[in-house]
Image (cartoon, rainbow, N blue to C red; front, side, top):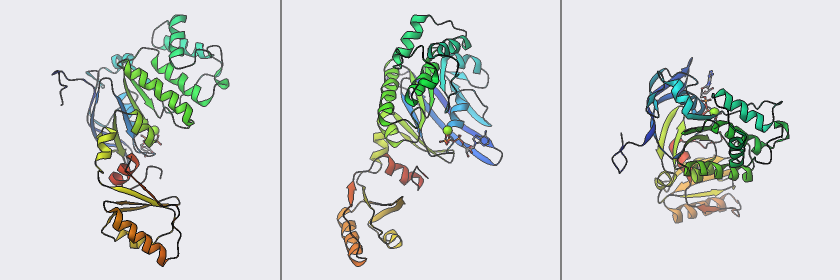
Length: 314
Ligand SMILES: Nc1ncnc2c1ncn2[C@@H]1O[C@H](COP(=O)(O)OP(=O)(O)OP(=O)(O)O)[C@@H](O)[C@H]1O
Ligand SMILES: [Mg+2]
């Protein structure tokens, strides 16, 4: 257990050796991690990695096969009811009630938590998620981004300490995604802890304070985005759409990894000059044009590729 500089433990979630299988499918394989108070903690992983299953156990919505989970110092097996009062949950797909206005949905959720939010509380909450103008609107008249923000407002109705967001920005256009990121950051800045899942590299890299890379139910890495990227210090990534001979490239000592992703060939190397010379020779021998050759510093996508052996979109 780590202890913060002032000597107190600031973990609001502690998970040890968490396991969950569905029949023969191992969804969560011996996961251990802690979440600090006031951080944006993100699980990054492909479809089926076990992100939703992990979250649903932390939220008390389903039981683990084994392992220990404490949330705000309480045991999830024995104190789930008390935990639920202090957490906010946005599920991967939130069903909004078609016959209730934005304001009425919030009122209903408040009552589910045994609260009677006043009109000014509801207005304040809706303004916080940028829906102050939409109180009397029915869900069918909301855009995708507005629906996601309403779902977030519903997760905030009980003034939770920890907010779980399962893919809060999936399917949104970049502008709506940025609006949601700002709202999530403002929650963090007010001392809330946010645990979210995402498929988006940029979201993990720019929004999350720490990122857990999860694949096949296992946590393959957990650190700040900067520290994760630093693991590839000295490595450069070269991409091209030229159809270079894949097998030949794989055997070259200057190239640490070769990956085809859609029409792109992606190479990781610590020796850019040698690799470039090789690529130029191969292109010449095969009469290929290299007019879209790019060299870049590694990002989280390269880290993911290195750790899991595959790109996230598979
Ligand atoms: N209720 C269930 N019954 C059987 N198998 C399940 C169930 N829920 C999840 N699984 C399986 O467990 C594994 C992990 O699923 P999970 O939903 O946790 O993944 P995820 O990382 O959230 O994926 P996505 O990014 O697609 O939401 C998958 O193989 C999935 O098929
Ligand atoms: Mg999921």
